[in-house]
Image (cartoon, rainbow, N blue to C red; front, side, top):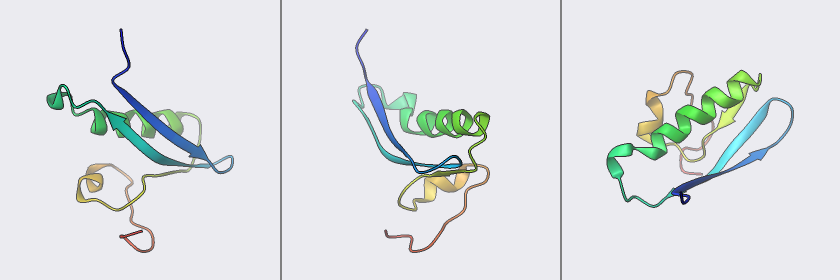
Length: 76
């Protein structure tokens, strides 16, 4: 009955959003809420016909998601 995580997402236009921030309490790391959040956000925006969900800085774990591509400088 209490929040354990949140996502902050910025909408740029009718087809692109950026996941700016995700945070959670880490009380149950086995839940992998960060991965679950990305999976949910991908499905959520795809269902609404968005073309792009920008995930921020390039990290190796993000490569596991279908459609992932790295744009520009991986350190920005």
